[in-house]
Length: 554
Ligand code: C2O
Ligand code: CU
Image 1 (cartoon, protein in one colour):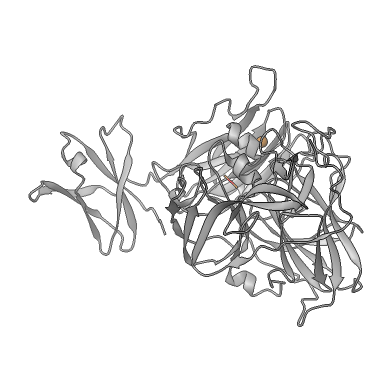
Image 2: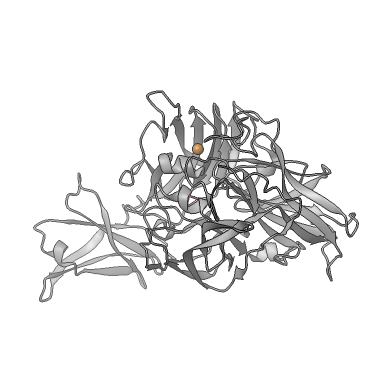
């Protein structure tokens, strides 16, 4: 049963998530509740005792950060740092489970550019449920290059975070619960978790950091007077110069940073930020005509309000102009590419032999590595969508640059997609290509994920795993091998570069066995010594060691 009649003409103040700063961040995922509708309680998940969603983490490029994430739910979770270039084992994907009542403490160095990222649960088969209940938060990375620009950056004043999603509710007595499955599209828009949100923005240039945190819906963003606004950032950094637009389509998982110029507006005037989703094709997620059912919604194929803006007086020292130039991005080119790879999105035809979405007709398995990439190679990936619907493709570890989008709905790379990205929209019968370098982090045992960011599609198995492996082992011959000491330890020595960290690997069989990382050593000289102390391996009649170069963990 839908909650009809809840379309208040009155507005609610936009909730702005609190911030956490520094290099140590404490997060605790909790179950709580919120009254979205007066007198009706909705069970929600949130981080740090908010009632929906979580605090915004502000991090600085170059800092080594530690996060202490405590799971106070009765269920397992994971928390993924979406868009971050970090070791796979720190990534918070489906392998880094955090059981109920435990704390996970990843730490890593921030290598990403200044931009807007986010964190969210990534537990295989439960991502939709945990996201729907409200678990998630934004991360703002700052860096020196961005800090040197005259851009608005007073959080919540002229630099506003805006998390867009929607929910379907069922009512039962005093409760209005989220429909957590069988609902791709919500009926009620939530801006930072607020229904019918309004905000006061000062009469100056303001920055909006927008995340599409939906399950499936895309937003065709624009302002009610059709004014021009400017895109300054994509998923993974600033674009080279502000890009003038009147509409921006934002798919699930994507972020965009906008400059909205209110200098010519009158104090007291109002403006609506809207999703111009009416008249969209069926391939546009949320363009379907149905108003109910699994793929219907009261918001489908309609134009609806995202945020009601009241123009208020300018702040002291307002930003009143746009920088003409933002930065120089060195994107990869076809000449850099050493490998082409195609990932095909298949299935998704209900009633056929392939009802579920898959990559390359292969069901997802946590134990299967679907792709192997060589460390430091620039690859061209083509995501070819032959499946029954459109998708939002996300890849962990890297930021890419889009080079082509052919066939299907709205072909072509949009001018406002000309920046570093980690998520892309691929319509049905469309192919999208990107270039990316897989550098810094390698492992023979910890994979990164790629998947559709529609949480329902991800949960049903539209996900794959890739390893980034370091094959530069040929110069790393082990020069001495001795067994010594009372428990017959093995001491290995090999040539080394000072300051470089080397990973030792072991296998039961040099040709047919799989190699497992057993440790890493950082060299302080021209040679490295590794001492094997593991009793299980020491007790073996036969075993093989090799050295891989270099895994930078922190
Ligand atoms: Cu935002 Cu693999 O996810
Ligand atoms: Cu999908």
